[in-house]
Image 1 (cartoon, one colour):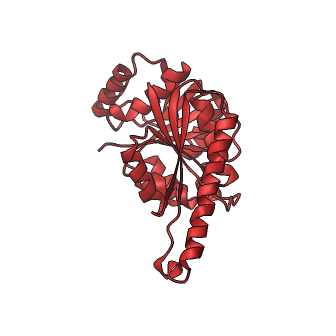
Image 2: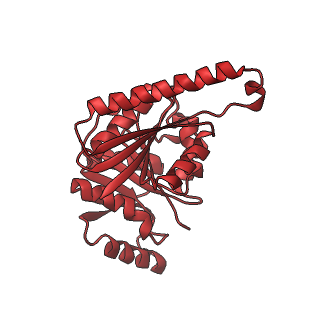
Image 3: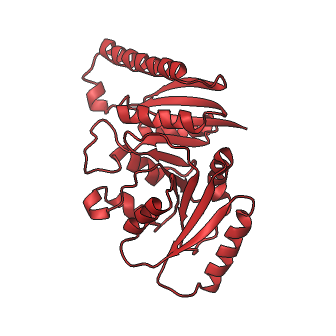
Length: 277
């Protein structure tokens, strides 16, 4: 099985840290990694710059991409890893969509922050924008300066109100790579599930029958964000997985990036999978 992995970069340390995590996550697999740098200038700005200066800026970006490729090649031990570089004049979201379609990308791996790295911000504006708009491909968001730990334990919070099938394929693919366990957590104060929830639970069990998994119930006694973080700590979770759909928990997170208001700042990689409906 070959993977195509997209690594958006603004040449920040955070972006490189996320790329290194990706290299280690797929260390034993055949992969092509695409480093993408996207920068779209306003027409008003471009009109004030000479062609010579614009070409010089483009050359500098290409040189930085080439340096990234060389650094990745030299720090990476897998001969089955190939590296490509892409420079785009589109905005980041459009550039990612184009590359995802053109190269059949399996995962986008990016850092939580860009060059600003303000401490109170969990998701940088680019990351929030990509999570909101991306419908084509799973996005793996890696915390700043995260030291790689093999993901042996995945947490998947769900309220059982939705039926999941192919949306969970990226999760299954990653757990297959690392012989991992899936911990499904349901946070609720209800004693009983509705008939619809019971059906979705049964379907989830069937869909994951070939993958080690357990179910965990938690009383809804505080913010879900806090409870998920407690669950991550208690079960030594290595990666958090959520499905992004309308009115999902992820929506409430990315509407407000200030940690103090949301209280959601997982210290582990966070896989966001777009919902197909």
